[in-house]
Length: 302
Image (cartoon, rainbow, N blue to C red; front, top):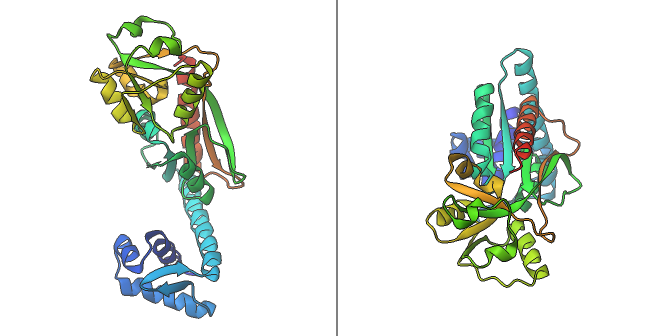
C-alpha cells in the first residue's frame, strides 16, 4: 500500500470523518475519499460502514488499521535511524503524562533536552492516567510518565521511583520552617486538596481514615495550577507531591514540608514504554534524560 493511503486512512480514523482528515492533511476531501475507495476496491471489501454520514470501521477495517499504524511507526523509526546514521540527530518524541507533571517537571526538562538536541521535536500529551497507558500501548505515544499506574500486559517499565507527599505552603507560613509534619498538624489549617480521580487523593484519604482524621477541604481540584495559585493567594495549604510544584519551589514562591505519617504511602512515579517495541533513537535519548533528571531531583530529597 502506498504511503499516502496509509496516512489518509489513519487520519480518517483519528478525526472521525473524511472532511476533518482532509483539513488536517491540507488536501481536498475528494482526494482522501478517492484513496479510501480505491483501497476498498483493491481489497474487495469495505473498510468503513457508512451510517448517517458517520464512519465506523468494519472488522476488515480494524485489521487494516492495525497494519497501517504498525507500518507508519516502523517507517518513522526507520527515518530516525537513517537520520542518526547521517549524523543529523533529528527525530520526534511523544511523551504522555499527567497535567501536573506537564506543568511542573516537563517544561525545564524539555527545554534542557532541546538545548542538547536542537534537531529533536518533543510533543507532550496531557492526559488522565488511564489514557496515558492506553496511548503508549497503542503506539500513539513513545513514553508514558505517571504515578501509581497498574501496568497493562502491553507495557514495560523503564524506571520507577517513590516520592513523598508533603504540605505545600507559602514561604512565610508558620509551617514552612518545620523539617517535617504530621497530618494532624495540618488539619488545623485550611486545606486545599487534589480531587479524585487523582491517585494522590486516594492515598491521602486512606491516611486520613487510618489516623481517624476528618477533613473538610476549602477547595478541591484536579488542576495543579489552580491549587498552586490558591496556596500563593493565601487560601490555605495543599497536600501534594514536591514534583507537582517544582518550578514554584525553585523560584522560592512556595515551600514544601514532607509528611512523616507512617500510614501515608509514597507516590510511585513510573516511566514506561510499549512492550515488545524498540524505542526510536529519539525516544531512547528522551528516556535517558527523564531518568537522569528524576535521579538528580531524588538525590535532593524533594
